[in-house]
Length: 260
Image (cartoon, rainbow, N blue to C red; front, side, top):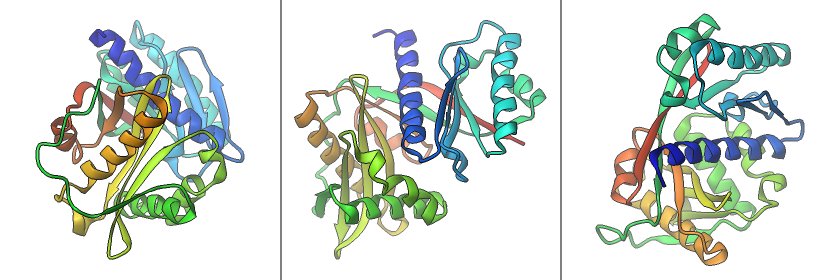
């Protein structure tokens, strides 16, 4: 697959996850604005109200026209929201263009992919792992992510513990120490790719290989059930070095913008 195709795939995977969350929301809405998709969960947590480019722009005028539609939509909705896209698709000068629309850069992540996860470079930690297949497992997924990413617990539980999210097969894994969940990951099969998200490890248990462990267990389960080995994710700066060791390769830096 060429880098151009992988870039499109990385956008597609991120957009598919956002669409899934919006469709699982009780009041969610999905709108295609032509080159930009809105996935609005109508949630107080801004990360569940997304606008994602679905095709590259040919000029900054085109970028401004697309994003202006999202700005107007979310202004009417009175919802916190964010815009996500790879830097290549946004084009040169995007930061100034978006600032002119009232959006400032709030963060970034790296789109990554591998055809198959590499064998572990060192022995995996010897701790208990459990598939996420009940309410207690979902609570572990929710609470670890809320704590690690400093998000209100009820906001995360509202999505991750809701039955709607789990209607389609998902494959998650928690690691436990003294019967308490300390690391978690979730795999979403999307368009022939296993998309990894919701990776979180409690601060006191980091640098022990636990994220590596739960990701591998979740991916192994997903591959057994689906036959898919290709996997993608969007990495934070903290997670990036570990994903490189697992065989993931960077595709593109994705930039996040939100109303200033």
